[in-house]
Length: 89
Image (cartoon, rainbow, N blue to C red; front, side, top):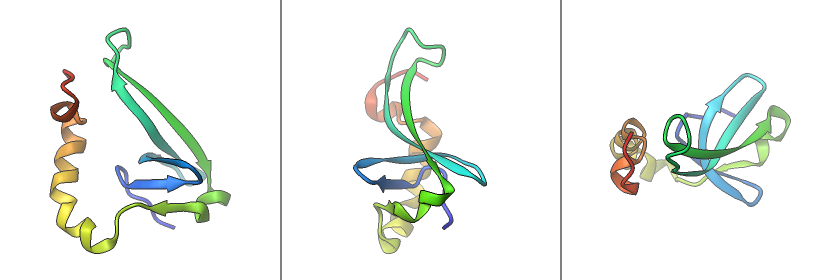
């Protein structure tokens, strides 16, 4: 299964986006909020999913919607969502 960074997915009962991709595992970020006490100004929590469980990871976006929204998603990732949550990057 091929994943894309930023792809919105569900694994069991956790929904988030693919944050990191390795040959042996991926991480799914399910919490991202502003936190001034952190070095980068954000608090993030991620779930690690090993390759043997990738078959349980489901994309939350169907392929036709994905093509239409790819430009918006790209901007969201580049801005790290700051336009939407009101945080400074």
